[in-house]
Image (tube, rainbow, N blue to C red; front, top):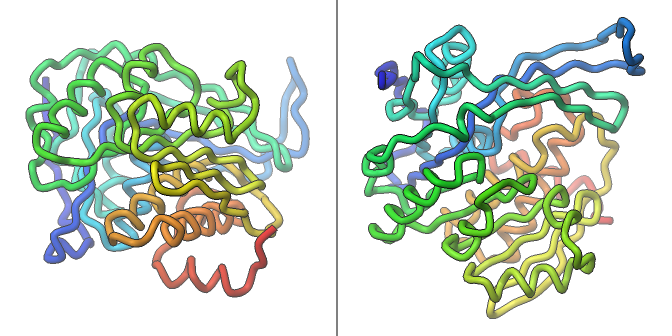
Length: 314
């Protein structure tokens, strides 16, 4: 395999000793806004953006903008889309030195159609899910106190999690949509983020019961995100609801990714769990008010706290 060697110096303050690594799918998103969708017909697009997709890369960009050194571990194609992803990541100061460029793979791609407050997404991460590189996890930096993972390649995610635990790195897992292998990841993650796309598919429909049940399966922290209802947080010590903020949403694509990054930022700063959750919820709400990830990802901690001063909770 070819390893990318084009690394831009991170903007992050590395001297503070804060570093977050991430393993997961990286996707090129083409974002298109339209007033209506006509099946089997032509649709006029009022606005379009090419941006970074995938929960792990986006969360790392959030952290990088907030001053945390970040490193991405992923596998992309040796193609134009892969070069586009590297360009975006390097511009954002994310360390791309460990990304594998596989000539036999096509870089994952997604089309996101936004119609008012709804989203229609066409995507594929199958090639990433089929990648097997047994030694890849051994390259995980020993200096990262946190590792973010998704479940798009559960086999390799398990290898990264095992490596992380061996070096006392905390693991945060975003469940996303239900996928094969997630049941094997949940018990070995320290913190799990559970979006509605996952928990709404379960037989149990009560969020409180779901959070408490997941907590018994191994994680020390469980966070259920509930869109405009905020989120539920469950640990062995506390259980509470964090309300969301009153906003007019214009683009909800990537909101969960922003939440994930902002939540990790709070942990990296050793904030209390309630302050961490409030910050992540505010960052997610703020992101709903802007179109495209370049605009919606906050550029400073102050920007998020200022938002909380001017927007009431629901």
